[in-house]
Picture 1 (cartoon, rainbow, N blue to C red):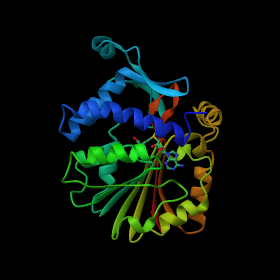
Picture 2: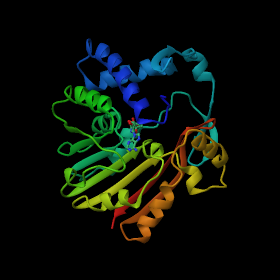
Picture 3: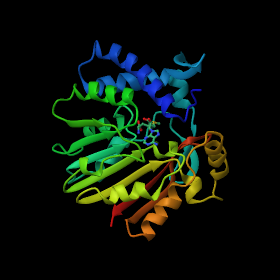
Picture 4: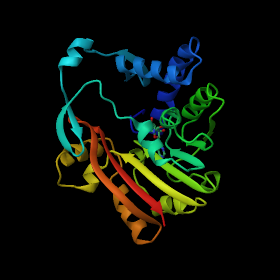
Length: 280
Ligand SMILES: C[S@@+](CC[C@H](N)C(=O)[O-])C[C@H]1O[C@@H](n2cnc3c(N)ncnc32)[C@H](O)[C@@H]1O
């Protein structure tokens, strides 16, 4: 049974996106254009499960003037607020701002590499290796196709998940280790996850961008909605507990915890918290 929190789901979802991207790449040779065309297509379509297969279906969209006039119900810097419909979180800029001086920018659960490509295009370090670690072959394959559009970028696509990634394959001097809406799919995060991070050579800065506000403040605003969503989809409940245990063991040093910094009020899975730690 294909459920939307499973690796099988993502295997099928990245395969479907590969078909779309291949047709986009028939007429686009720029990585930035190919990614933007894909985002534009996905703003008008949703992926639905029909007869145990994934399909794209056109979704209702607002005309641009109505979008200019209509505030979205946003979450911003931990509070609810009206938001401008054309404002988007700039993940690439956020990740690039932490990547200065890194010889490796690594992302676990990297899908088709979108965040790493956005980081590169936002001015991420030119000489660094960008390593996408992803459990699905379809995600890794699409990432490799896209990276071929950008020969100046040192991109590598490796197999990996939260239980099994190779710390020795990452940086030598300084690694930025990122997850972005990926650990939420791991039912349990073992302490061994942080032991692997601690085994990455050199300095390591971890940047976790995950919808875990309810783990940071279980009684805070929106926590009940987030918990209900996570429970219904059998998603992670113990990331922060394991993070704190790793800090107590001296594996990492917490640097920053920002709850619900962005997202949409009605959709708990868009509500991103940002957690930073350094390898001790
Ligand atoms: C919502 S997508 C996010 C992809 C990418 N990080 C981004 O922001 O575009 C979730 C990704 O996490 C991956 N994933 C699922 N379970 C995982 C696990 N246990 N460890 C690492 N990655 C996982 C999926 O295969 C998928 O590529």
